[in-house]
Length: 130
Image (cartoon, rainbow, N blue to C red):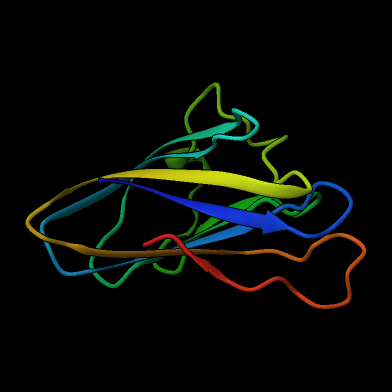
């Protein structure tokens, strides 16, 4: 399934989000990509979440990680070549974020992102993608 959400960065420079995915139930839930349709930057992934697992993709400069609460650091297992891991961010203004995950057996996958807009004192709201 593919889902899109428009996310607004109210800051004056690029913001670097943290994506959080949680799976419950079903047979298969494999995360395949996250794309900023506004910039074209894409994170190509191949990661199947287990029931109850949470996957966090943190794009904060100097702290870029892909972490599972079951397995720890999974960047080598999850991230595919040709991903824009070094540059993926949210431009000032509206950004359309698309996520695709392959599902079978009716799994429930929830996803949201959060970020701190540069030069703002308040964190931006969480954006639920699905």
